[in-house]
Length: 185
Image 1 (cartoon, one colour):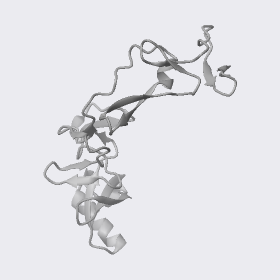
Image 2 (cartoon, one colour):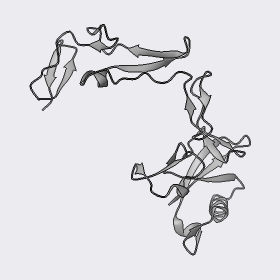
Image 3 (cartoon, helix red, strand yellow):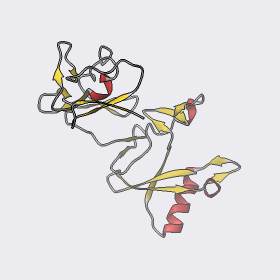
């Protein structure tokens, strides 16, 4: 199966269509132009299309969500999505810029914050899953989001529950209604 992105007059992706391999290959080799002709014919249009790779993200190809051994399959930097921009100079699909301050990484064609995501290595389990940072464009920095009203910021600058996590080998989740940890069954 191959995927093709339909572009508007400004090279923004407005649709994604799939095409069976048999409809755009010759002797087992994919041919983008055949896929484009196929789509324009069956849809009775004359649109601009670009093939995209469902398994490519950040210039890296994956197979079953694992790094592919064959990186020659990495195609157009990112799998196209609605609203992505096709940059013909880079031959890449670029996602929408999430914030004005973010910077395009030339290799991956993904947007990076001007300040790296905070290191969470000092946050012990289970608190890592409850402590999340969100980008605040007003201050151009990451902010730690308070997970629950009852939780407090500790001296190491992460939120902890008012009752310590049970240390009995079981797994628990925080129940804000009863202000305690509930056993996961």
